[in-house]
Image 1 (cartoon, helix red, strand yellow):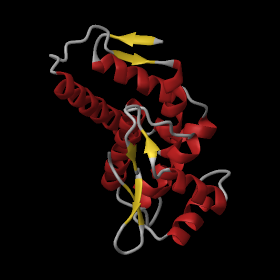
Image 2 (tube, one colour):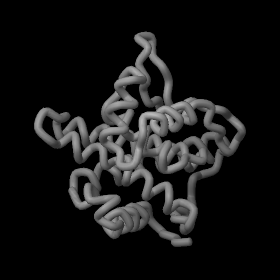
Image 3 (tube, helix red, strand yellow):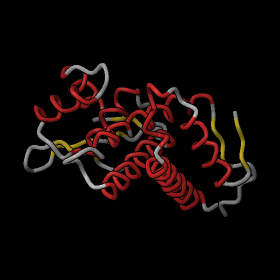
Image 4 (cartoon, helix red, strand yellow):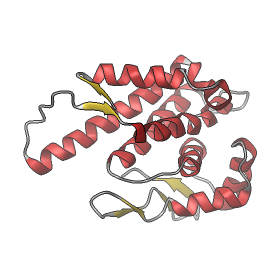
Length: 194
């Protein structure tokens, strides 16, 4: 377990971790804008979770060495990085604008880290599909399955659909069940914050 005395040290360690990943799984993390978006998303989630904890227990929020990276956090951090790979494709011709991609990556990282810190066990497949939906959604199920299977390495349409459906009724540490995805009024799937 790595302990940090400041949030900035914690965020710098995350950036270093993402940059050290093999290029086959995290080539996009060498892009400074994507790294900054991942950091900003985790920072926002961390701040939100700490404020929720403080409002529940009335604590002053003073922590010594309160920022940690546990061994069990590493696969989730890696999955968030891999999930952001969909952003790299969006920079291509006809893709989303860079500003929109950075905002979507930040929102996705925040959503995943907050869910993880609240006790949701998310598999790498779930994180990848959630990231794809956050970046490209909302979209109809058939479109989502086709596009995600084409852009996510090793994913079939069935694997995309299975991962998507498992993002409903996700149990948190406190026993609450939350949906990280939902179907809107038009029948399209979208990521939803918790």
